View 1 (cartoon, rainbow, N blue to C red):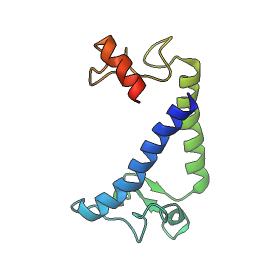
View 2 (view 1 turned 90 degrees about the horizontal axis):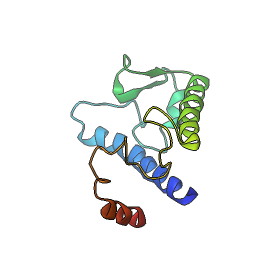
View 3 (view 1 turned 90 degrees about the vertical axis):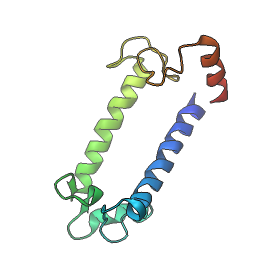
Amino acid sequence: EAELIHARWAMLGTLGCLTPEFLAKYGGGISFSGDSAVWFKAGAAIFSEGGINYLGEPQLVHAQSILAILACQVLLMGAVEAYRAAESGPLGEGLDKLHPGEAFDPLGLADDPDTFAELKVKE
């Protein structure tokens, strides 16, 4: 169980590292202040003068407080993990906490039970 959850977080982390660099290079007008598009320097940008403008737009999210960012992270991640651990949430009660399907299956991957069982093993 933990291995599967950690693998999913690693995939999301990789996407989070690569997307800003890709947007800075090929984003067509999306600019980042300084080196904040480089993933290992992005965290230090909060301490620079002016903070962080997400996607280069001060109107979108203008983060200047590390404590506010920490509070948002704790609240949002706490809610997600509470839903996962309780096997409940906005999509319904008693759902499989590791494998989406049922209420959350936008690509229709769980329509065929045999294919879905095979996908679970492959994951």
